[in-house]
Length: 71
Image 1 (spheres, helix red, strand yellow):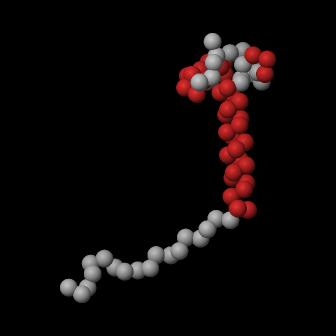
Image 2 (tube, rainbow, N blue to C red; image 1 turned 180 degrees about the vertical axis):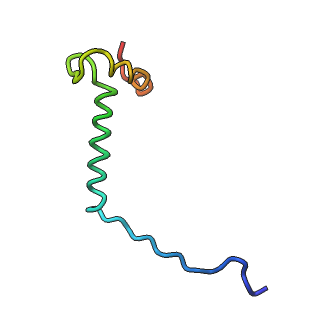
Image 3 (cartoon, rainbow, N blue to C red; image 1 turned 120 degrees about the vertical axis):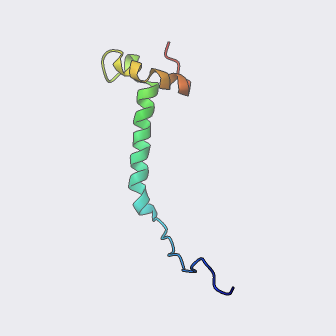
């Protein structure tokens, strides 16, 4: 049984991702996270961007899950 049932092919090497290609995505994700954190944690009261309680009510459970006080 010198022959193997699994073919022995060489897998192509995975090319590394350069920092210059990764930087725009890192900035985008970081900005998105900061906006999300603002809406979950601070979108009410004096710093509110939107009037009323609509955003607060939509994100209410997320506030409690992340430990932000809102009552």
